[in-house]
Image (cartoon, rainbow over all chains, first blue to last red; front, side, top):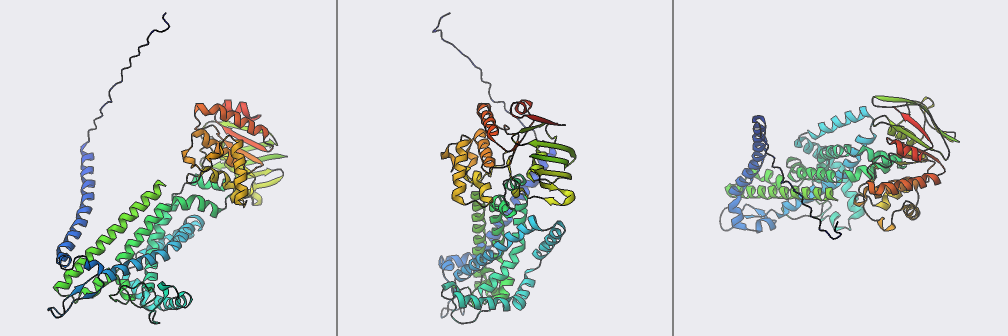
Length: 328
Length: 211
């Protein structure tokens, strides 16, 4: 036997087997149905955007970027002496300010409510509260608006006065005149109540899926209930909570009639949330729609398109944030 | 001084009438097929499941007795648990996992970190692993983290649930030796659960078979 004999090893590596899956008729039918459904939703979205673009295109070509950056909205007199000027900046800023305020107010309550419902409430009370929550989510906006105007606003005006007297040095809580009703803050608080049920509902759903074995592990290591929730449930539900908040933000951005009832429509960029001036795109469209001439109607369609795109951007951002937090 | 559990442990469709007495310094093995209720027994001692009837006491202190409504919360029981599936907190680092129990018991951050660091070295984990996320570790390393997390609490009762599950053959020998050393030095009560008769025989002094 030679010590330096070469060892030849020959291994036949078989080629990957190609699997061919033959779909049966029921599979194919189901596939067609769900594919059609998915494309139909996209087609509806595209048609809405196309319609708004078609109807509002003249405004974009007349005003260009000025339509987005300008705050003035004046239908003019119809002749050259007082030409029409349209810009949605004030309403866009108003939409964002009110919606962000609503989410900022609603989110902590949503988290607390969801944790209570899922981990503290006795079963009978939990079921009752969940049905109440679902019921509250179904109340029409106009009811919220009327209730907000008649019942909520007087209280919020009191809170606004207090905020202004304590924190008036901060530009956000300063006011040009001591009038506190029909302000973005009132609209923000009302919208917070409106988005609370859906945000709580999503948060509760997410928290209910937190891994039970890890909660047990936390208990086993000596954690209190709050410690276990803080360690396991809250980090687990982070991405879902963001998703829920964004869902609420979407509703808040597009809310029309409730905002219309509790907010003074003023075409001026206003970041003083306690001041009695503001507006959002949706309520502005509702306010102006009835008396608009053909040219202003086009401007309202263009404003609708801008709001539509803003909502899409917010939702895209939400998806991005949710995906990122899932990876982490 | 004994750990005594006399009563009924019930979960789902099975229940066991248990009469279990463990002496201090003893390693008590529980063996049985999968699904026999071995883990449930450990969870009952740890306070994650309540007894249906009977009494669980350690050193004469009653931890659980349904008839007298005595119930000690898991955090008040001096238990360290190594769970079968480890149950490390996936969003936390090695250090955060090991010091979690100490922090939950109100130990200051710096003291918890010091004690966790010492424990890491005791179980053969390099201190440089402190800031690593537990998801980046191998099966054997994760097992060591779980062991350190239980031991750092300096518990009276150490509960080991299938401590070699998910460990690759390469790490198994080292981990087995480590566990032998740990239980030999441990002065409290050790209850070890396994479906592997060999593990039980090599480490524990007495064995209970659950059918």
